[in-house]
Length: 385
Image (cartoon, rainbow, N blue to C red; front, side, top):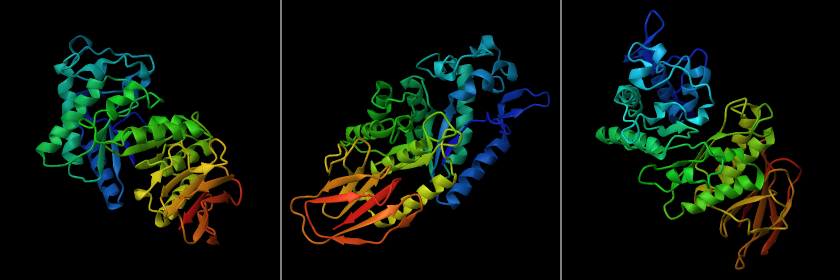
């Protein structure tokens, strides 16, 4: 589950006390806001759900959402634009990173007037979150802030957790859609700062490129493996970031490709938990009941699948034991087994759309097996030796 510590949607409660005149007092935090947060973590824990927090969300700090934000000088009784360095309007897209809210840290503006309230908000969040074992910590949503900003908050949160005797895991989520870009290396190259990696923005890419980027990251960190999370999978006919099928394909390429977590983004930009998403989640669970994906390796360069068109099939395998081949839209490929393979082979097809296994088929052993999907659409072939 993704939980952005944002209050911009209608009906949300901001984390600071609102006075009768409608202004906020940043010296006092809002108890109801944090009760809602604690209830979420408790309910998630009861259901064995991991919650990935995003501590800051840039969309709260620009355009119309900034106009309602307690940190906006006009909205609180604690500082002015002059004393805080914050303007009352930031009309450009938050990706412009115009708001110096994201430069308050000692390495940049060292804005103590602002930083003390940021720290107080995070401290209160941690008094709750550190009591729960099912929480991951992401510093930002789609940030264009500096490397120093994310590192500061990761170190700050890890320090508080260490003081409390709690082991936690942190990451940062960068805005750039190209996960090979230098901005993503601020996370990927720094296991000393971030213990897992969120590459949700790769889910703006499609088809073979989506797979190739994921495999680049998977192999890049092989020297010191860390989880690769996808807390947002874009793609739905209702949105701007790909079709229904794009979103579903991204989910399965992530699963077969070695991702540690997969979550459909909320509508309109993703499937959320609609009927399509539920069917594909059920099918993923059916596959994981039969296929030991945690000990499998992705065929990163598609070398084990021949007679394959681009984006036709993707393989995860445990050599001489199990092979799972995902077909985004049916098709036919040839699976190359190890040369020393012997014994019987079974093939079973998973009808993903209907969450249903077909009958097991026995076949003769050979170094090459032709796999032809029963129909178009999303399928997985499970081959067992």
